[in-house]
Length: 75
Image 1 (cartoon, helix red, strand yellow):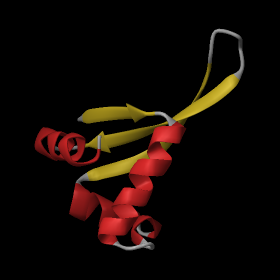
Image 2 (cartoon, rainbow, N blue to C red):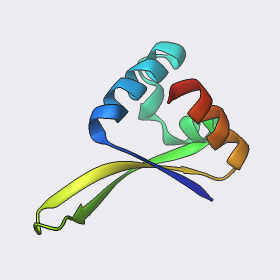
Image 3 (tube, one colour):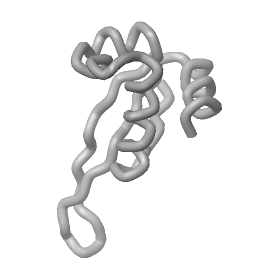
């Protein structure tokens, strides 16, 4: 499994580009994202050095080829 870590600011622009390509309601059905783009979206919460709770977006890919395609197209 390949995991890409993306900051929230970056994710907003990537998500809007994906919604432009696939439609506004694309992310409402998780299996559709998995089927068409090959990843699952999750929000990861953790504590930083200052013991403040922060989060980022993690994209979990089952296939490394899908991860490469995503990086080439959206990053």
